[in-house]
Amino acid sequence: MHIGTEFGIEYQINTKPKGQPINISTVIIFPEPGLKRPGGKTHKKSRETNRVSIGKGHLHGYGFDEEWELVPGQWTFEVWHENARLVKRSFTIFDPEKEALDLSE
Image (cartoon, rainbow, N blue to C red; front, side, top):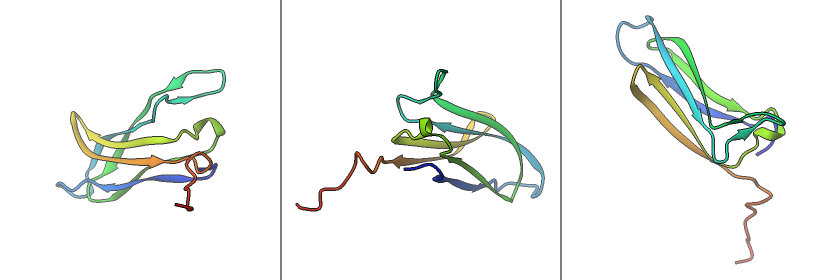
């Protein structure tokens, strides 16, 4: 886990008619205690609404650009259409300095 790391999912909405635009909400749920901006608010999740094309691949991801974003734990990515969750995928991010493996065992 370091500045410049990027991760996420690629998804495709498979329905008809292909090529038709559709509104999708993408959500990232951050691990506890959330992302705390220096001198600012703590964010528990991020939500965006995007207009995507049916039948085309789309990316939903996150990149670590600032030190305060480097929060270890479970990061969950979701894709929603209206009130239906279409995709849910979780990643566990480790702090290599705190999670060093003891290979002597």
